Length: 269
Ligand code: ATR
Image (cartoon, rainbow, N blue to C red; front, side, top):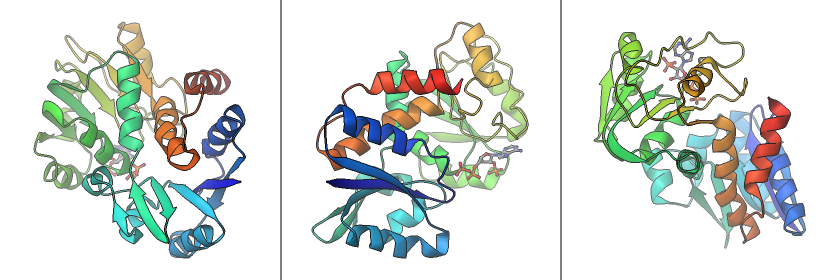
């Protein structure tokens, strides 16, 4: 039996076990995908225990993604460039770090007809999710990045040469700036947080992505839909990052990932 899972803290809300266990069933692979809750101080020990217990891989979620990269014996170029891993594969007594988050973002954009190259893209937020998204936007000429804490945006801009930092106070102007993509990676708009308060002006973005998916339709996404723009949210990013993750431990791709996404979307909206 293939054992895999997701490690995080907290992790009980994670949709990954449902996604991967459904895919094990659909592909008729004898596998089990579990959620492992580990506090930061217990993370390394919990990873070692999982490897010792026969897990072939672990997805990694908040707050362990940077630590996961640190403890790996080897890392993919994307995990290194992003500075975080959301997948650890155990092979030959070694830990390999991968990042499939940026693939999830890229796939979510392309599936909705968006483009990952062009003149300008806009990204709000410079937290954990932003680096993977900036990695996926390297073929844009210019990525305008705004974050409440400017120093975090500056740090990211130092790592990605096409990124220009814009004042957080100027974020409203970014909603009217002509861009190929507008991406919210902040927590704003999430249940329990203030809304982003963004107005999409003219000409504005060709496509809008909001990494938030609780609620499924943020004000930003609703405004974009109303303006007839293609959109993607954090749920589609989650499902599309799960595809290469599943392939890494199951050896074959899932059968109907788009149906999984549609079902989750219907259930959660
Ligand atoms: P994650 O790892 O999930 O990205 P994070 O690192 O805490 O979480 O990042 C959350 C993002 O939302 C950050 O860009 C954060 O801005 P700061 O870097 O200034 O903290 C942003 N964010 C959270 N609450 C915010 C608020 N009330 N106003 C503006 N930005 C906010």
